[in-house]
Image (cartoon, helix red, strand yellow):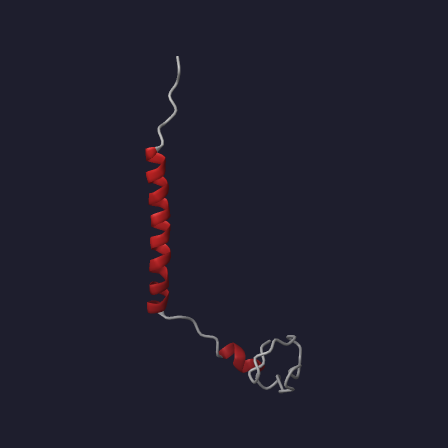
Length: 75
């Protein structure tokens, strides 16, 4: 659990912060309620570069595989 006062990491069952002494019992419920998720715009903006990298990597591997000649059977 992070202390809302100083930001130090504490045990989940701690009642007081080990660094600053702040009472963690009063803030334990509010930490979970302050958790927020990125909206659609942020998630979509993060998706675009990831998707582009995957397509570039896939396209590059197909390009390299097309250049390398296939082994021919001798006989």
